[in-house]
Image (tube, rainbow, N blue to C red; front, side):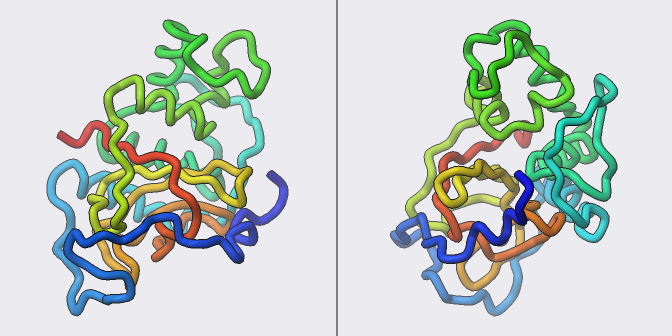
Length: 209
């Protein structure tokens, strides 16, 4: 995309219907919960450290080293938030993991981009591919009707204005509408009260046990 992804959110409606689970929409927590423990806490902390470092959005194709390749940390797309957090916190390289799985089962992945074989420069940077990989590795969870039922360390995917795929991480801090999220949707990595700003298409939890 070449336009500011944040601008696509204007006018987007809430996607989740609240149904209990401990907190009503608009009820702001008097105090923040303690940081998430264990691997979830480490993953969230690694994503949070990207704030102020990654200050722009850029999903342009780039030739990367393999494994462990990355675009400059000052930029990146929404997928870089997840990729970098897993590398930094848990030493899990989604570039290598997605590539290995696509080599084993290329037909299981979307053919949206007309590729005839895996491409380690870009495959892991595409939300539909990450969704497929998480699902194939047992990480898919039901999307809760109540936003408060999400857990810190969950990964969400969403569809912005019915055309742009997006991904981010559920934080261990709360806002008025539930858990905050850490993501990059146009202005760099940010932590925002925005989980319910657009239709959620998936929920995943991987590598945190």
